[in-house]
Image (spheres, rainbow, N blue to C red):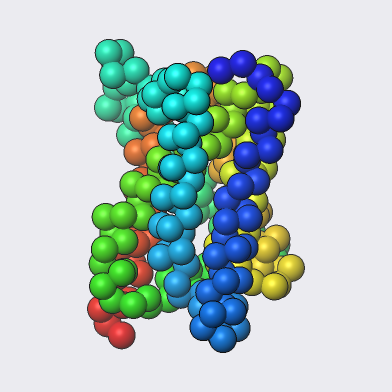
Length: 232
């Protein structure tokens, strides 16, 4: 995919999707943003579906498939199991370390994880999201920020840093709160990880490693929320 300076403008798309979705739900339900944070998985799944549709339209317009866009080749071996396992362990460890470090920097607490991220949600959507959220998030985010983002820049540093910046920034609005400290906390939680992911992808690491690790991280979150919802 050739670099086009206008194409990177799609990268902030998910930030606006989340801002719009949470603001709209707040208005129509007449609730404060702080009162609908537990809906974040439901709204995230909806934003994922919109993102996937946009990616499908982009691929169709360019005459390529999604797998071609993310450089996944069914006919080539996607790495080996041991290397994939090590990669995923590092990825998960970096994700947890980033969140804990951001908690110390922004809230002065260790360990700190934002409590609203695992709040009980409506039971049936919470159970359904165990299937929906991990797979749609993986397809949407890795398609947008890796396949579409990283591959759109000829400069290595732009490919990694610009894509990683927006990859992390979207999390600042999941959920959307008018709280600068929370926004910064969420961004810092993910920025080191997204830089590492984008760099590994740029270097040619199998995208299957990244997508599997990403799926596991989101699966763990949805299971935790489902358990909390069952115990409510």
